[in-house]
Image 1 (cartoon, chains in turn red, orange):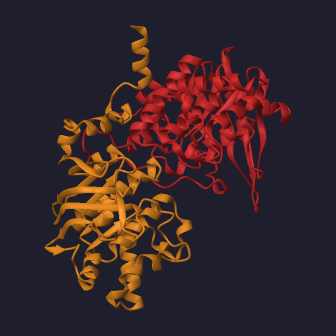
Image 2 (cartoon, one colour):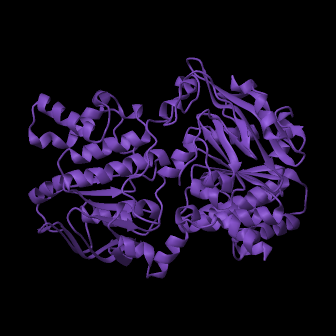
Length: 339
Length: 274
């Protein structure tokens, strides 16, 4: 199966400048009858100082990919293949203890719902300082100063006086700023942001995206931005990877992806979005629905819904291959899209 | 078709020793609007702006503090129990959450037929009507005998729509009906709503925080902020030249992709290279 496809790594074009290099990552969930692979042979790279957008609809495996990278999988799931090279070392090979040190310090994560990631019973100052102390020994004064500095940096006004506030005293957008401050306290190299703006109002969403882009520039951070929202990745990502049913189906630099999407699924997603320019008579529809992981189509997983389907799509599993400069595609019969 | 005047809803915040409210939160503040038959009014605003409260006041699912709602000559706020029952057949609501709003213990047939009990249909006629409705919202024929959990989010939302249509309503309030859906499901439901409107002559109050979705659905748009309507205008005008600063900021927050503009990233880089 695709999990063991070395062919994809050749397509990635390995260069020295990657902070993260994921190869053939496969995660398996055991179920009562058999097992399923929500992440199935996923390969991608993230450059230093790069924002990679990982997009797909619910159930495509994008969040599971992030949890696999962090080795934070639920008990029923385990990583059954592939490698995750981070800054030269394989994250899948390090001890649980070492991994705990890497998490938060080298790689950190923010989630969709900041309220559930902050403990309502403690002040945010306590939670920030606790994060610092978990990784470094420092005086309480120093920890306090660093926390204030970070809150200031994510745009929380009068940071010093807000340290003693509890999470519920912040609005949704402010809480997401606190989450970002906490994630970036240790100045990690990689930030995994899982739907960081989905629960926010549109005006706040736009501010948080500005903030992520700004912090990324200032701190030379690499970011994996996981979202279902193409509008969000278009806004700040350098490159985009599109996932469908556990696999990456297309990777390209952001502008290329939006100007010249090649996979019929990516094309369908872009066409289905309503826009502000004019009132359309009808929106494009991708027929059918996402397959269940325990009943995947035999060859191309998108084939049953694909307008470009040809016989081979139902016979042989397509590989993710480089089509042109930096553009990777998993499709036998792609036609350019007239936008 | 619908005429709302001075509609206000105050929720008591604090009460004195005798239980009399001493301070209020005004969720909906002196709202007036109207919707023509067969048209869609898009109601936009951010969370907490009072959109959903306004919708509930209009359907009298919540008692109003002040103001009037007139639906096709019926004074909804002062309607008798009988009048209200009749009104509720003509006006229906579809909610955001296709998971929470369908009872998981009932089969789709029972869910869709629930509102039809007063029609006194025979079992066979009822089944016939349900299968017509399911066909109307493009669900497979065998859907009637299945349970909600067997369907995707988009299909569940179509079940909700079929349930709302079961009583032949003229007016439908759709409260964020596609917000919980993925893009590919969203377009299916939006197309269906437009098609049903054209076929059945429905009137919609379409509530959403998503400006692009409202662009597709609405003939006119009302913008709500802190309980007040700040701007009401034909959709083409609102999107071309918004007058109120709040409407402008809402539109400017829409991802640049949907506005056909360069991305934030490109604009940043362009600024940096100057």
